[in-house]
Amino acid sequence: MPTSPGDLVLDARDLHKTYSTGRSGLRRSRVSAVDGVTLRLHAGESLGIVGESGCGKSTLARMLVGLERPDSGSIEIHGRDVTRVRGRDRRLLRRQVQMVFQDPYTSLDPRMSVLDLISEPLVVHQRVSGGAARRDKVAELLSLVNLAPELMHRYPHQFSGGQRQRIGIARALALDPEVLVCDEPVSALDMSVQAQVVNLLRDLQRRMGIALLFIAHDLSVVRHVADRTAVMYLGRLAEIGDTTTVYEDPAHPYTRALLSAAPVVDRSRRRLADRIMLAGDPPSPTNPPTGCRFHTRCRFAQQRCAEEQPVPRPLDSGLDRTVACHFAEEISASVVPPTQVGRPATVR
Ligand code: SF4
Image (cartoon, rainbow, N blue to C red):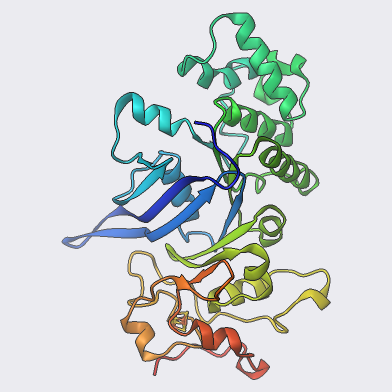
């Protein structure tokens, strides 16, 4: 479906996903992996998602590409809810959203040549007919990711990790998707090639006008890639907004803590003067805290926080930023005295 820059491509609303983790006594225990996440992606934009491991980033990604079914909520692609359509319509819509996986060592079938790996989705979706057309399309895709077309007859074990990830990207681009979901696409790679792959993704996104959803735990990578950034905590969105605003002026206490813990080469760029230590470990997702899920670790927590779930709401007029915190305005305007750093959260 043709799109123009800025068109709404993917509209995910109020997504929920829980998993069964077996029985605990007579009760079946469940993990709440994603709890009420809403986000939108427009043509040509990149959205980064950050958060601690286990916060639900990957589950969210897998729902968006159709590898997991949400328990509830909707995922609209060009206004059509893919969770409700079936058959050919579903396949056509799903084709618009493709995924680049984290580990290029396990995501490529070692028994398949590069030609077969990249052309498989083209064959399945009947986008090419005949061997020559297949080879031409694969050569084009390999060139797109800066690999020589002559390499198409080799097998995954003959490539480095960075090259394998390029093959994974070429495969994801084979069906001309409008959205590319990248789940930690460089975390399994050597530092020396991470920047090359990140720059390739950014370059492809700009040149092809696709929307990029980029999940990473490395905050500096997300800052480099993303136009907008979403911060997740224990299955919920804490804050989402323009990347510069979120990084330079974080409003949610969890965003502030996360950013303050990230290494900064140039200390003059750090807005948060001291590292903010979070009290305690992340709560178990099988038994998440009531109200605001961050209240057990938040130094600003009040009684209301333990009782009432904060609804994500716009914070600043004129700025693209939504924050899920009852006291975002006050906290955003406050300066945390260094003496409070590391103080355990209390609920009064
Ligand atoms: Fe902290 Fe309360 Fe805001 Fe949650 S709602 S982040 S506990 S101040």
